[in-house]
Image (cartoon, rainbow, N blue to C red; front, side, top):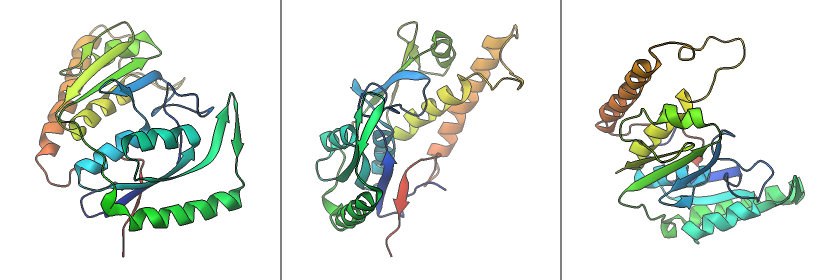
Length: 231
């Protein structure tokens, strides 16, 4: 699945604070392999990544449920989005409302969000600079082989794109090619003398694939958002 221009709205259920926030014991962005992800200097959540991508297609984000810190983060970008805080992080624990109350609040706020969708607008920047701080320095080194990426420190890389799709394509390459395989599985990169040549080749293929897909209307990338098509 995924999302395209035919959808009327996007709703996010069960989301969490991003890496760099203390609003949830599970705070992370995409995986636990980074310290943070930033868009144009501000901490980026999975909500923001997906909301930006939807906005680029002209689809508004209208509702989110998750922890209290994330709800505040959402309203920083668009105060019109309806939110329901179902929990609040406290160290390694959470203070949560009951499942019954959560379902009722979500049902009501989601309805209001869909009805209010015309007033929901996340402003897209003209250019988008993504900065990722990895927990392991070798991941930053590997990511640096993607065309246009700058390694700004032992653990950090930056990439600037002129569309969310372009930035998302780079991010997918980082995560698909900077994580070691599970124990016992073969690794096509580790321990090979021509690792740099192989990695440049993989990065080039990924970038070329983006250029091809960008020319097709409705091009998609895997997306974690929960979408709702109006009847």
